[in-house]
Image (cartoon, rainbow, N blue to C red; front, top):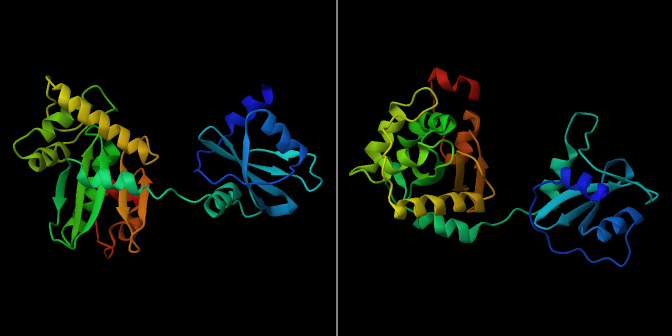
Length: 268
């Protein structure tokens, strides 16, 4: 049980791989298997170690076995240049989910549409909480891109504060949701949204928000802002958190746009 607790504490939230078939494993890996872990892939790692992607339930981790097959190492592997090789190996050996079904749901969801409405405009979906300061900063950051062809579809979720769902309801049930959304962002202050939250929220809207929260989680994210878009090759990309301003051209598929808002300086 002690071994299991140690390993579970270092689990990496990676993605599902097909089960790796092998007739024999080193003794440490066989010990893991007896404790309910499943090896799904092996690979050659730095310093003559052998890496293994190990599954426990829906969670995944990377462990390393020494050349003699007698010892196992867990935790981060850092090279001589300070690079985290766990991240490198995860990107190389763990395929990303395609999110095709989730994206179809996202395309049908009720959202606030802001920016270009041209048929060939680039579309960025953003899960936002009305009380999220980083969502507010992202809103500021994408304004110049909206002027040159970006459409942002803001999908409300609510979990940060008790007033989040009331503000989300005030936005989405307003006669003009876009105007209400802009009111929230334009008057944002002191880590609170700028629109007055509704005090009475229908059961139907609570279900809608719960479904939005669930969909955001399905994209392997539990925080806002969560950005979802298709890249130039049509692949679905997901980013949790406020991106750097230098990443916006890649996200929006548009040229870099100047933004001199001092609140955004830390994201340069």
